[in-house]
Image 1 (tube, rainbow, N blue to C red):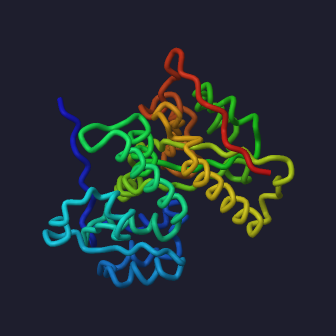
Image 2 (cartoon, one colour):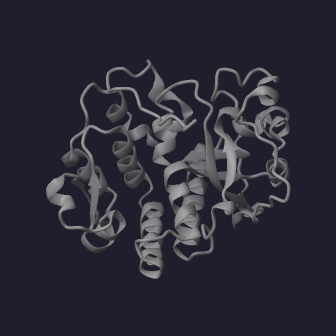
Length: 286
């Protein structure tokens, strides 16, 4: 049986409080664009992009635009136009990713265009698949405790999310969700959502107290920029197998069942490690 395609709820039909879920924490500044009855206009999105000093602009994806015959990524690189469907959740969330994480989006675009030049339009390279998986369903995970990495490597989900629950509330592990398709799925509460992640390990020089929110935000910003640099330089995302799956539903408080230890044993998102699967070392800062 073919997998059923996800359809996001209509605007105005979202469950109350959906945008307050932690998965949308990185987009808090633009929460009204998720909550309000009206869709933001392209002019509003472009104004926010300009405030971030980004040269690219969102342009309406219509027949006139598509008549140029350019590939989506090529159009961004050559003309600075990000084709965007109006009144569309997927494209709105992609726009938010551009606004909040322009360095990541530019790095992904640069790599995609390079791969297109290398392999052409008739096929896709392993790197293109990895880049797309991260763009659509990715997250950057900041770890301040190297011991958590061993649990993650082993797919010891009970250990990572239950025995080490405090790691996710004390700041030893932080997630910044980036993938716009992943965010779109989160518009329907209660789904079991798994991100495809790049991990960043914080060195001793960057260790902080969890209560120091300002320094925590700066460290996370450095981690995201380090990730963007690694993508742009082709140090990472050359193969989809580099990406680490992380069932976001397991993070304490991210799913209504996460307070029950049995959840980590029974839920389908907590898959065992496949034989022979080995993840690359994380990026590091500090």
